[in-house]
Image (cartoon, rainbow over all chains, first blue to last red; front, side, top):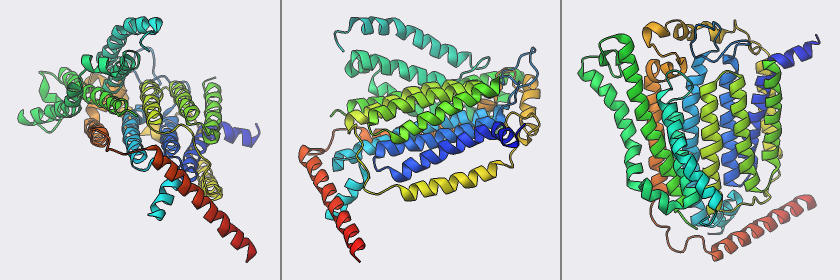
Length: 122
Length: 138
Length: 207
């Protein structure tokens, strides 16, 4: 097999994870809208979930719920770590959105550049 | 949304099953996928669905704000309470083996109690956050 | 077969992400992020993480979407064009991606049973479940028993975030907040900033 295709199949999960990660990074840096920034932040977060779950998979394995019919199980440890991370992620997202709502009430806008412009004016 | 007959009746039919599914996920978490986090979120989703269709006021009559806010710290207290109880029994913090007469039973008791703590906090927090966002008004 | 389904779902994820970056209407962005979460949950099922898939579907696609829509209802649903060109961000993202992809070349291939991650503590959980906890779902037993301290800390984080949201949003709005005047002021300030930028550019070009 062509060595590039071999590498592609072996590392496709990681490459997509990296793409999602830098997309989140790009949104957080480049966009001024705060809701969009938070969506970007959660894209970044979700890519980290994928980063943890992918290496835990064993091809031909089953979910780690014990049963005498199976012998090969995927690694349960990343699942535990990410399970808690997801719920913490939504809690922090809610906190960020609450801040956005308050900023909108104080400044009348959720665009970062408009807020900075008002700050310079005063 | 007051006049939408189909949505209102379907919601009324769905809600008991959503609660039942949440409880199934909670108590069957030892044998299948699920646990306190998922069950808490499903319960919160049930309250959110009710609020979306029947209005926030109706939802807050069924699940009052004060109860939800009480649940937020209660779950953490249940969790730490299990840990402190095992300390009083003479072991370490969260050493479940002291909760029953043999190891497997004790572990199952510990996991059950701790998951109930997680369930209370997660469902309470998610519902409280939704109430805050929905009640803010324009 | 597993690997193929996995690759297709991951490609769809990448496409949805491009949509999220390019869309200007925030409602569309929120709905796309819900689709993203459902796709991610499907990927988790293929990767044998059933508990995680269930959580991601209910939290990511359910609660997050509701909260984002609630925020849009309280604020605005259209994104304006940023003042600055995104070249710096694009450059940073490209450099980060390049460095990370170079790093992946040394990692074990996808799905290999002899990767270092599988040779460590996970085997103990899988082999001793019967004597040590008696709970067949290893994820639950690790979550609540072996790593009970982690879960306690994380419950405390949720509690803290809940208290934070209650502190920020409970009670009445301060009077005079978010009047049409203020929005007009914001737009005017933005226009002024744009003009200043254009002038600065023109001066740069002259000199």
